[in-house]
Image 1 (cartoon, helix red, strand yellow):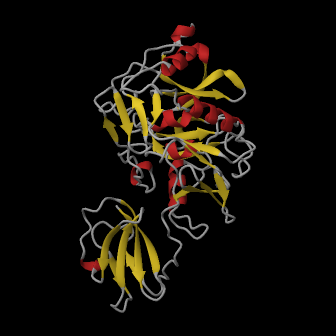
Image 2 (tube, rainbow, N blue to C red):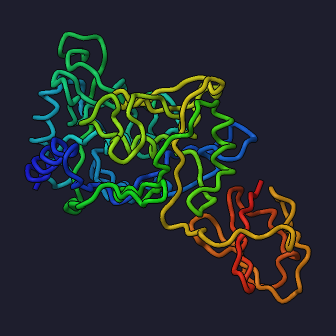
Image 3 (cartoon, helix red, strand yellow):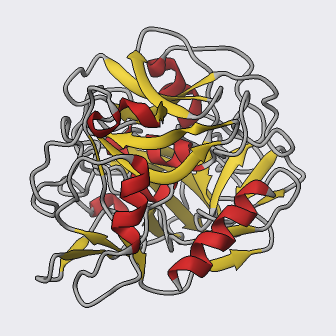
Length: 393
C-alpha cells in the first residue's frame, strides 16, 4: 500500500498544473493549536478553533492524529541524509506496521503546534527532540537537490539536501515516519470556482476569496478588514491561520506557488496569516508565494491578504435591518439586548460551526458571561429569518 500511495502522490503532484485531480491523505486540516490572545483586535488565530488537535498515544511507539487520521512515529529517527531517511521509513517496522513512509510537506506541517516555539510540537504527545528540521518526501519542483522540510520553529521551507550534518552540513535534519490508517482518496477536483469571486478547496472544505485585497496592509488592519467584510453573500470571513494559508500552497508550482488558474495571484507575494509567533509576539506568520515557505514578519509591516471562511457555516441569510431591530452591545460580554421587537420572535444563538447555544423567546434574560469568546450568529425566526453577526468578548 505504501508504494502505491507514493506513486499516486508523485504522479498527481507532477500533473497538478494541468489536472485538477488530487490525493487527499488527511481527512481534515488541524488547527494550529494557538490558544493565547495577542491583541484586542478581533480575528486573530486564538479567536477561532476549528479541528482542535487531538492525538491518541497508542503505547507502542506510535501516535494517532484523530483529525487527519494519520499515524505518526512518536519518537523520531536520528539525524541522517535525505537518502537514508527514505530508506529508514521504507524499512521501518513499528507498532506492528511496515507501511511507513516519509510524510509529504502538508502532512509534516500538520502536526506542528504554533502555541509552542522551539520545538513547535506538543511534547505531551511527541518525545523531546533535538531536531532543527524534519525531512519530507516532497522535492522542490525545479531543483531535485532541495527538499521541503518543516522546522522546529514552526515553519516550512525548501532546503538543500547537503545542509544536514551527515551530508557535510551543519544543521540537524531528522525524520519522523507516517503511515495511512485508511487508503487516501482521489478527489477529481481540487478547486471549484464558485462564480461569485470565491473558490472552494475540496481538500479542506474552506472557501477563499478569489482575489487578494487590492493593497498591502498591516496585520491589525488585516484582522479588522476580514472581520467586517461582507462578500459573496457571507459575513463570516476571516484571515486564515498559518496552516490554512499553507494548505493552498502547491509545491509543484513556483513564482507563484499558488494556483493562478483559480486565484488571482500571478506573481509571488507575501500573505498574512492570523497566527502570532508565540516567542516574538510583535510578529506574525506569513506565506511567501515565491516557493511557498512560511516565515514571519513584524505585524506593523504591510502584506497582502486572502480571506477565508468555512464551507459548513451558512450565513447566506438576510442581514437584519437595524432601523427595524437593534441588537446591542456588539461585541457583547454577558447580555444581549434587543429593541424594536414585537415579542413574538424566537431567537437562536449559534456558534460559528452551527452549534445551537440558546433557543427561545427570552434571550435578553440569558447571562452569557461564561460563553467562550468568538463569533456567534443570532438568528431571528420571523418573517425574514434574518441573522445578526455578534462578537463575544
